[in-house]
Image (cartoon, rainbow, N blue to C red; front, top):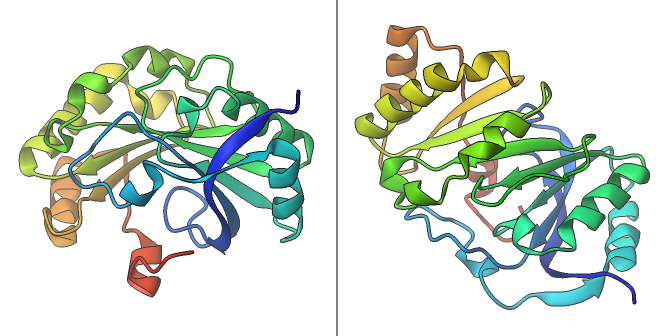
Length: 215
């Protein structure tokens, strides 16, 4: 039986965050997520979608002739066939990244995939869902992301970075201000004051397209 995945959308845009920000990328957004973060901007991917074969996904991705492919959600690892999708995208020669909440084990994810693990802060409302064993599975090319909703979130994230010495495990530690909750200027000044080994980022796609569908 052919493996299938439930897809919300496949689209071509500029990567809006992470180490490859600004690079043309095909996004494969899988449907479904077991988390309900209070700042979520992709709630439309919680339900619905269309079940299609992995081969059909590969064919659509190939039509854009991309270098970079990002598998995102929702929470893509909530679908068991996501592992096969990631492997086949790697086999096709793309530079593949996975955006995951960190709530589901990343064990068995193809080592060629760059994992962008979004550790949930206290004010996300989903702190208890973090699977900290995923930190032991990080590779040097992986990235860890924190969405900062408050000064308390920032202090918590700073502690976690230090506790796990994340700067020695991954290529990037990303701090993002939650839109409307923390000002970018405040977060920038906190990072500078503490001389943290992190990259502050803003979501470029929101600045350019204001969260229009397909971007």
